[in-house]
Length: 272
Image 1 (tube, one colour):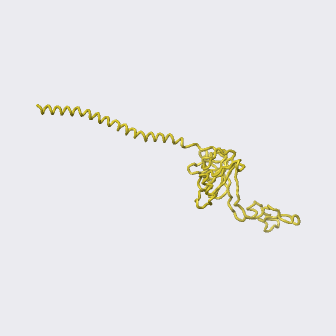
Image 2 (image 1 turned 135 degrees about the vertical axis):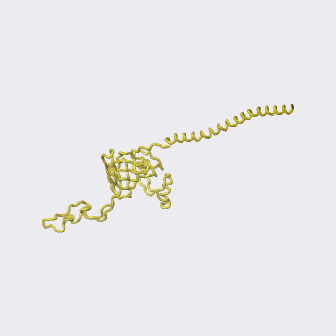
Image 3 (image 1 turned 90 degrees about the vertical axis):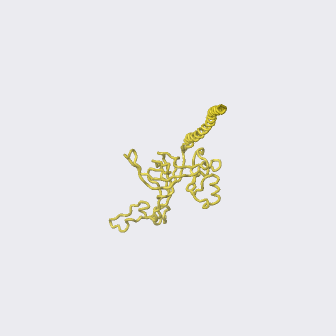
């Protein structure tokens, strides 16, 4: 009988202990589950916050009233417009990125201007004063430096990057470039002379330049007389060219018409 009582008491103790164990395990499991859910929710919250912050980080480009940029001429092509109903010749220019290296003010220099740099170069290939100039602006060390005048400097800061986003389709720009060198050329090719007559007793004058001045008075050749000589290699500016297309991923500008210079030549594009 005593053994039966002991076994009964043991079974009762086990039955009473089982719910207690279940309650303890449930209580212990609940915080664990809460911790897991919190840990799983944390990355989700981070992802959501990152997605919400992404559009804010992508600031809209500044709409400059007056801006300039360096570029390299890639070549000419054509674009089809209006679903292929029309086309136009374009010059493809790889523009920028350029960096603001100096801001000139009326108080100090006497005029407002922005200096930009282009085409990175090794720091060992420039002088120490120029290296200090780039260090002051916090911009990369570049080879080319050029400035353009502006009325308001509020849109520019030292170290700012200027790329194709500064332009919009339809903007009118002017492009400065160095024309292709033609070497020594004659009157007809260089200046468009018509040459001499090919008949009525004329001989060997078809491509001559003709008279270059009077005899006794002034007894000299006037300066600036159009004659044979070195042709090309001049700084040429073409105005009122329209931007037809902008490729922001590849930093390309598609400019309507021709641009001075050879392929891979340096050009300077300005919006006024």
